[in-house]
View 1 (cartoon, rainbow, N blue to C red):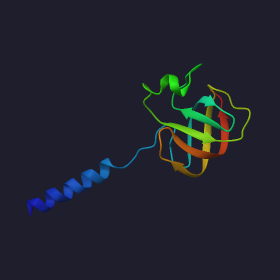
View 2: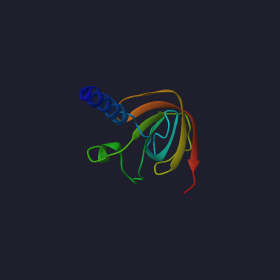
View 3: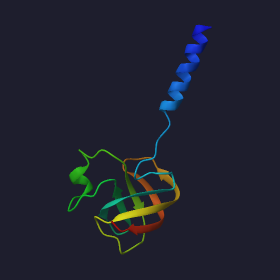
View 4: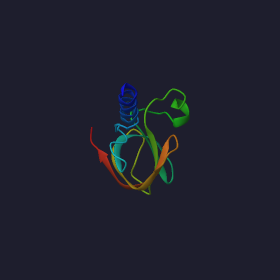
Length: 109
């Protein structure tokens, strides 16, 4: 009987540890908020902290946190801006993650 109770407690503990809490970037699977680190022709890289005059290559070895490349055709975006975004479709589970932006809104600080 003790073994069954112990086994049940372990299953509950493992299940609880595997759940993911949302971060500043990934509050839910379909939206998030962060700072633009890089801007290219058709995508932006969004991270949790504001970095000025740096690229992913500059910070990737030391950076700890969420990061996501968002495909977008929005032309008025600049490095350092804080944004709120919504994702269209799924998120590719790489690091940084990758997804298509459905909507991007600049957040005034």
